[in-house]
Length: 295
Image (cartoon, rainbow, N blue to C red; front, side, top):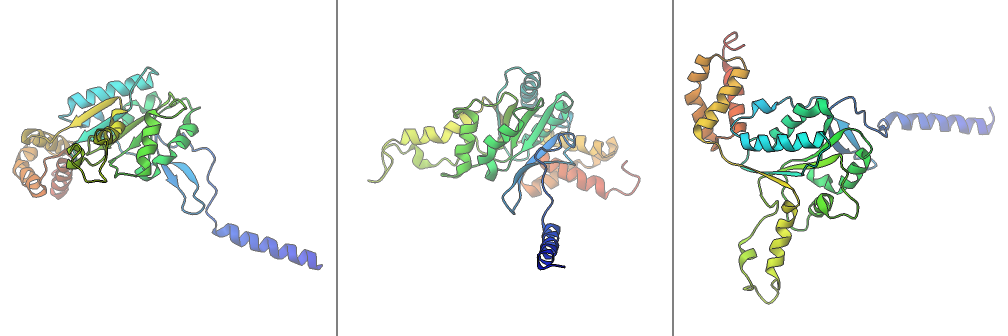
């Protein structure tokens, strides 16, 4: 074997070892048939960005959500308009924690997936990639909801500006097959301070135009065309949600009635009568029943 042949042989062996430890190449296009829901991901090595299919998406249905009828009716109508290729709005869902904001978006996906609706979940840290996501799906026949869960921003965060531009502020028009649905515990997505209303009573280095500062803080939420507000549940509403989930786990009406006191104690311990707390209690209660008592 000549020296050149020896060198080529060793080079091929080295390349084979390197390829064995490298992660598999990602497809240029996601497999759109694998799921109705996707997550925007970044690979740590190389910073590659891609859409990953969610293979075990939530199966919650619109009928599973109770005591948010007005909010459910509005977002369902808006989503129906969207899948029918009629004008529709970006949606901001705000209010009390655990009251079904993100569940309502997931339920809309399950309700309209067979009509071409798809969902893309994007973390707040990746909002700067929204233009790339829109470009990726712009030529697709499906209708895409970009889902941003539990949004809140501190002053100066890059994601705030990126989302603001994506909603209504870029020189390019928003793709007609993409809407943004976001949830937040804050109505204006940014912290509001007493000093925002302090007029001109600041120090020598204070803001000369405090009113403009306040306008900047609320300008993002105003770019969502539809606002849905959620409020804490009353006791009877909470118990009704508990009853729904217990029945879904196969509990009898007698078992549901006997669980009432424990459900109230469970909520008291957590300081909340939210839908999430009701779901957690129902899982605990049904799981503790002797085998055969709940089907």
